[in-house]
Image (tube, rainbow, N blue to C red; front, side):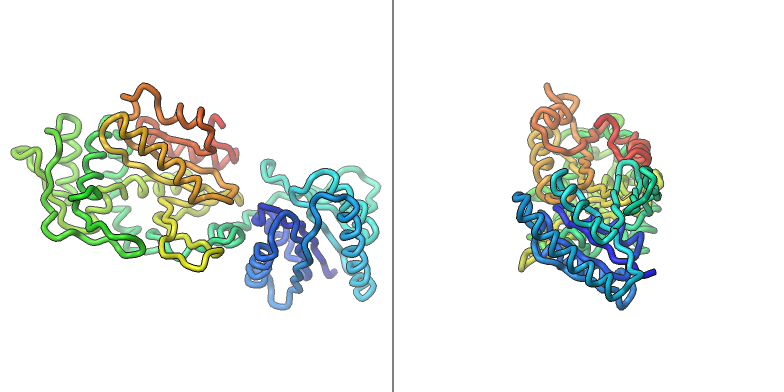
Length: 416
């Protein structure tokens, strides 16, 4: 039986994709509601790529959002069009998804759709259920379908006007090297609270004004600065920093000798990127895989499709998807010192909000620094200032796989 699906596309276009990709109708009517024509046209392009060739996908005119009389007139015209299609195809079944429109609009839509005997759909993402109420059914109980995991990272981003162009973890060689460093990565993360000062110094040695890396504006690729491989720590390392430096030396990631404790040498670009903070992004990627998330990518370059130029793409430390939900994760290796940690932490929180603006995602900041020495921790400031970002500070990094596993099962970050 041919199937036509009507979707009110709101400010969360990815939500409209779930029933369409799961039910795979032969005809789709996209109704712009609290979304722009460009947003909905982009959704139509995505669907033409994802659905079988020959699927009829149509984008309607903008639907009014406030005046009930104008909304009713719009829906009357839409219903007449649908009834003409039913006349041409007597066996045509119709479903409609009201999305997140308000109650008055939903009631007007329900009343209009009764004229073409359309079934009502409701997507409950928290319950992971798709409810379908058949038109004219004598039963008051809807059919309940489990929502299938139809959104991957690329579909989620494209529906929201972004495009993933590449990720470090796409490379098989990167994955092999990351796996080779895995034990050391976990060691640094599990001892990040006690190693915060050293890890902040190593980040400065790599990224600072006289650091190992050449200071180049994006999108230029990073490169080593000539004559900068030998660096000095600002303070003599004490235990357990000396153990960490010895382990990094044994792994070949830097050169350090106990006889000259202030001197370190970094000779390759890969090692510099790891020591400068890449270890934390890799730890996030490993943790996502350990938690069993269905998809995760590290070092993702994201372009904004709504701008003419993308000279500075957003580079996310880690992106992950589970049950059609997106996790947008950033990392911070703060300079030594409590006040510096807080300043950098607050700046990174707002950068994360800017980078992920418009995405209905769980936002997570992994923050490594000496926050425990501050009078107020970053997590406390984050709650009082109100940005919707979850923060995992140094001492809790060891629990990241368990935290991600909880998010996978419940759809909520622990404590939120």
